[in-house]
Length: 469
Image 1 (tube, helix red, strand yellow):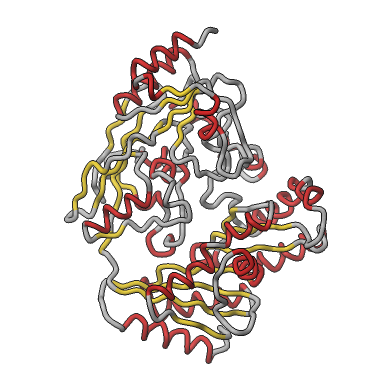
Image 2 (cartoon, rainbow, N blue to C red):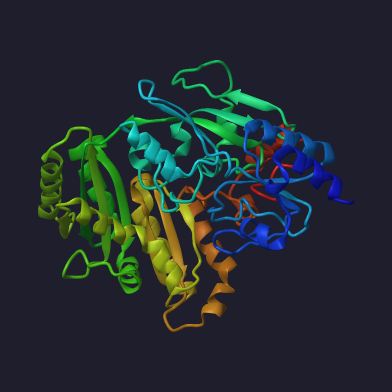
């Protein structure tokens, strides 16, 4: 089929400058962030308004052209990457980046899908409010992608996942119809909560074009610390201790191992938090809307009691904003340090919080027996049960040979996750990377319910085919 008429009609909708077809123009959109997946789109279409998205979808539905929605293209599971057929259209939302409204009394902000997360945070900050979603890619990821993957980040412990921050959505359906659901209501008990279908659906049910999001009072004081520990089990003991003493002031509780710290120090100019080396570390942060030194004193007394009780071995508490940034760098640079060290086998998993220590011990032992010498680069958001449980090849070993056994490594990890009542995807989604793997861990009934929803909303099967299902 000659694509020229379709491309001409797309150009008429969004303008010729915003229909990209040349290889050098489309390639940045056609390759995922990890460079694991690369496709060949028919075109990249860049609408600037919801009406244009609707017209594009109506045209694609009429021609049965598959559509791949895309935000900042920072996903980690190939969920926004087209296939190699040359027949799929990428719809990039990056030109739709306006903050449409901010209501400080209702504590809401209404933003378009292409709004970069850091810009959204900044808009809230300028209104003396906090938008708490925070993650490593916030300088380039877009809120539409965050919604589509139900992104997590470092403050889920206090504020919840992206799903918990959404009050209303505007969505263009596969038919080209627009569902106008931009309501800033905390209570709306008028039937099915339709917005939840689209959050975390990775663009397989429709295209989110805007959202009403919750804002919170801006913290006036923060206290950041790193505690040294013996084991992940001690991290859970420390979490329980801090929550008992500090309540919901605890904003972040991030675990990272000695291997993680060694990699960060190897590849970044970051000072060690302690003179001695310890097996495990936790970065924790308290925040409060009350200004003053009370929070730092609370952090000091809480960690002091933990050390006296033998829960923690040592602790360092930031005394300035600059030092807090240095402590955060120990955790935030782990992923980049891993990338600099070389390829590894990544897992984004969640485990019931109470069983994290047990899971790490058991799964480390299974991997060590099956793959002698492997290095466990384990870190993550222990306060909400989300681990980035990554496996690196043995030091000095054959990297390519180890990576060739990825399916075997994944099977050990994912089977263990299932045995501990966890999930093989916590905050990165399924995309195409885990699409088939999930069949082992979800029941036939659950999978069929998902397929029925997909068939109902997308009967032509044109919305991001090959992802999730």
